[in-house]
Image 1 (cartoon, rainbow, N blue to C red):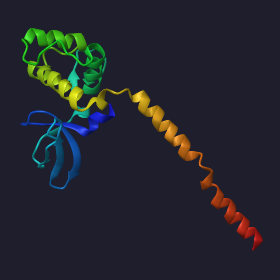
Image 2: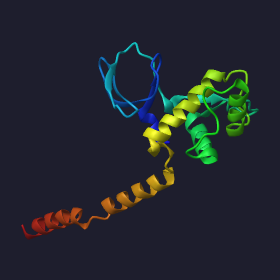
Image 3: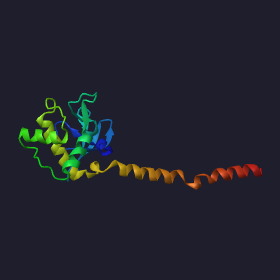
Image 4: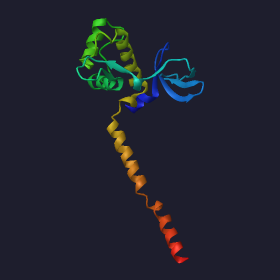
Length: 170
């Protein structure tokens, strides 16, 4: 989920933000909603890129967390556009929802507020950044096709042939 590298959460502010441009004085962000309001987040703002966020899991292997992108993908595959749970639901409903998506999530370290954020972020991303849920296989096929076209251009080879022909005549 490459698109998650451009989307962030800012501590103390509701919603999600698209990172537009980092600068010396902070980061310029745009709200991920209908208003598309741009603002400058100073160097003291705690900006968390969604690609760097993970969910704790109870696992015997070395992996103690699962990337947020994988969790969002699992929610998308299981529920699609409509979630059956409300972020303001009871703690038991939220825990059941999380267990249905990530069965081995760490129930002690993943708080109810984290699950509420996950549900609201999923709704925001579904509505205002659907490209996050597009399959990466389609993107890689398109990139491979572009690279194949760029490497097979015969025009790039012609100037070299002209240079050798000119040096042979001299």
